[in-house]
Length: 382
Image (cartoon, rainbow, N blue to C red; front, side, top):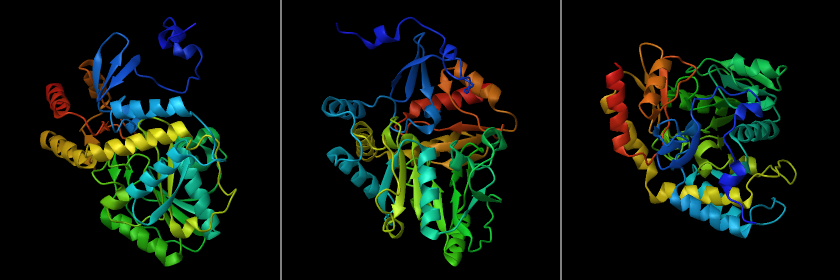
């Protein structure tokens, strides 16, 4: 008997009856995505400036992505890294070709937290040192190792005691390192902290201090990679050399993939068994990666990110943080009521840990009419 997806889903039910109560959910039942919009169960469409936590860089259900992933699903859904896999080979090549030139190898996992865990382990192994420097406002994931370099107490306190030796530094200031420091890790744009954005001087100062003591520089580009800022990576945007770059979010168009890009000097020290994951870079994930990279290139989405930024800055009278399609609008008061009011007008945006910052993380193929509607809605709200 042939069964449909709708038959398997069945009658509407309350998700909270089975899921851990870990999420404060929006009052939306999203059932479909198309380009830069999502549709709810009542048939209403919303412009998606939130992008599902900055994931939908190429839009929802992109036709090329759907076709490539479906082709791979018909051939082979999964086999582990114990065998060679042509689609994985092509995906790894595409990622490295898009990456900063010194990052010649890639390790694929399942999430941004795993990508950061991999980078932290590689840094400690390569240097033989125990300490990691992280910054106030940092968010690097919720696994134990990633939590150890995440600044927010509300995330860390749940899982204490934490793993690792972390030193905390003030955002925007270059700390003085010693020879116990394996690496500095930071997000070039601290999205959750309110789109706090690094400067060129800050990043190059960190690079110089790492070089002085033989430490590594890790850029957490879970949100800033793949053209999101209007450059391939933040490392390219600010022309700073990172030893390790991590990413996830939009790398595979919505399929869960973590990416750790590795400098060749570090890669040469990795031997069989040093890293591993069962599901990382399976054939279906690799097809999703490959399709996403193709769409970014074919549709010129890196340049499009710059156009989105210019159009937002042109209409918004206040401070705009971030770059490209990763922007924070700073208001004189709390944005939560505005975010809710925008939702009533068919526009999804996000808040942050800074109550006065509204986050915009839309698909990079967002039509300009959506930005015009956002501008009109914000003007009407005052």
